[in-house]
Image (cartoon, rainbow, N blue to C red; front, side, top):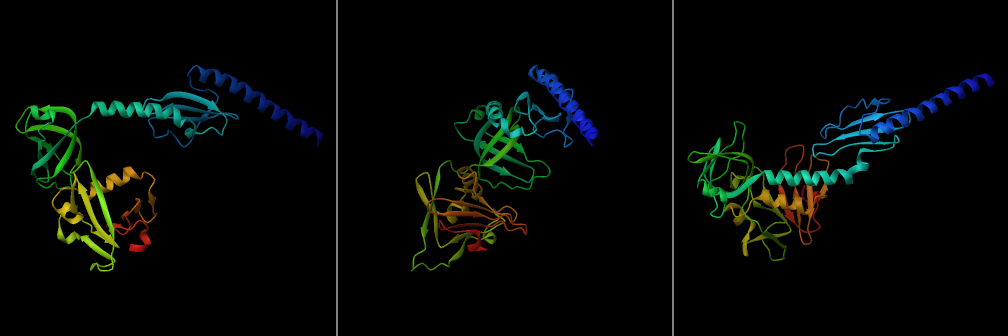
Length: 302
């Protein structure tokens, strides 16, 4: 028995010594920004952040960072060291990367004056620099495009900076965004006893317009919107292209990055001080929107 204990002790001692030696060698390599040689690569493979690789050694771990944002460093520590331990360091590179990307992009605001399933022609606003090149810009939508842009719709076009000399001028757009209003405010009024509408009612039914394939509902109150100092009913603003539901939801996403979400497919609640917006996204295909009281939840309307 004692003999076996001695053998086990010797084996453990050898492993510890090797671990110390291996760690010392790999530690010095990592400090010189070199890959470890006494480690095995994580069998899960390369992390999909640009090429970061994790390695495991005898009691230690190495992370070789290669992110898309340019964070290129090698870290060594215990097996408990985690990728997310270096979020603060990576964040600085990500912010710089995003800033450089913004600088390399070009964009302008304008109005759709011609539209088809394969292209749109946009008239840039008077104060846009691209208007010096042309007062009409043709933008291809691609063969698989499933969005129809109505004539008169305000859009923000982001492109790669190249303007082809033709008339209308042509550009390679990287993003097309509906941009009806920069500043707007939802005005919600709680339902009064003498109001004739139902507890849940359609503000704009999908059968009334081809702009939306879902219905926008009100719940226990009326919904107006102020755009550039002018107040409209939400239905009026949507039908007259003064605002889009996509813009309202995009603002809600920005206002509430950690909004309440459901595991029904992705429905989300945005709780403002005086009202709530619910964007349905269920597995059975429900995409309806509800705007109602500040205490409204998904269970109240479904």
